[in-house]
Image (cartoon, rainbow, N blue to C red; front, top):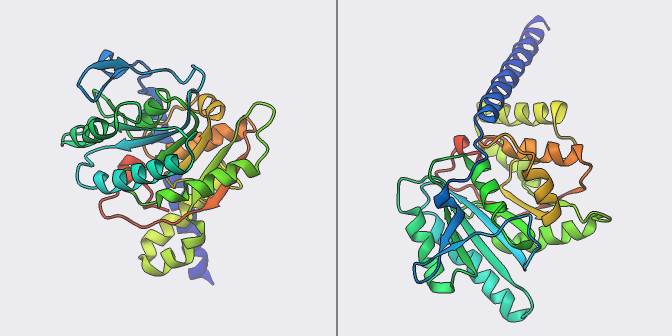
Length: 296
């Protein structure tokens, strides 16, 4: 019994220490957030190489769906995701002629050819459908998602990881989740893709240490920040335009765990949040420092 008590005390101490580290990181990164947009970040390249200005999230929507893809050194993994994503969107547009979309790839200060790979899709499909926002310096995944969101035109705005871990067709599931919540009168709601249904499988395939980190993180998030959402970290979230403007305008954390703050802000504003199970595959190369999904 004494041994069990000591283990529990150690776990509590580790949890407190982890919380302090997370809060310290959040505080430091929040203090360093640069809300200004570099002159080069105000424009995107057309298929012919001309510069056009990005619109603003404050403008009225002019498309049905915007897909924001944060990408940092993703020249190898992104093509598979883009083929699946644009292929799905093009097919949907053929079946539903009134459906319109855009994909905004946000190159987060990559040192490889991520931007050039993304621009190939601009040349293929046109800048009205695929745009590349190249950040002058690395902001972190949260910062990249926010910059892309602030430059979008969609009535609905989806954030999706460049590694293609989530099957893109599951956008229909998160759309259904969005329609299931009450978005009136301000038309604000969020629908989160979730891997919570895969937790038992994840526990079975991971080390005890990673499992401890997973449960410890979930507990801290539940206890201090976001309640009612089992999976805060999955990078597949759908926002109404109004909800995106409300939450991303208030976001401070730009790197790891920015999703937690985003959902915390939403709950503070009493924005309805749905959680929907999606198909997810762990992709080699995911980075915790980028705000990825592997911790969960």
